[in-house]
Image 1 (tube, rainbow, N blue to C red):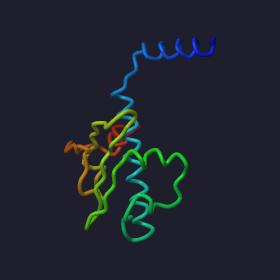
Image 2: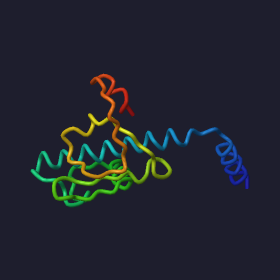
Image 3: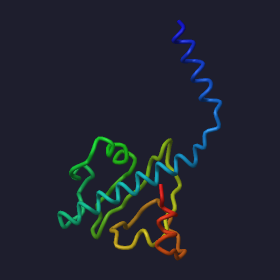
Image 4: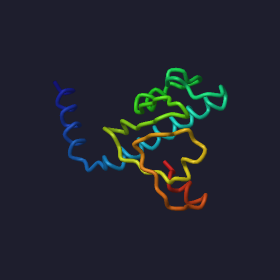
Length: 129
């Protein structure tokens, strides 16, 4: 009985906290997207072609299951389509500088690409997680 009351009290306290859900959702979404891009591009570097499916990626760790379930990947004729579907709690709205896209095989995505020019240091700060 005491455990139940304690659990209910803890849940009530957590629910009343001001939790910046939008910011956390975007932060997790960026991490998921960047991780997916890194593994997909590494696969192409090692194998000469993009994977047919995310399940073809090798050497994933246990934590990589999180981002691999948060994105939707589709191989296309000249590259791939990558959509972020889940951050922390739902689909985040993400924006990356156009410079991030240089050299990648991304053809379609729900990420917004910014046309602003950035120095390398500014770019690192902007996509810092």
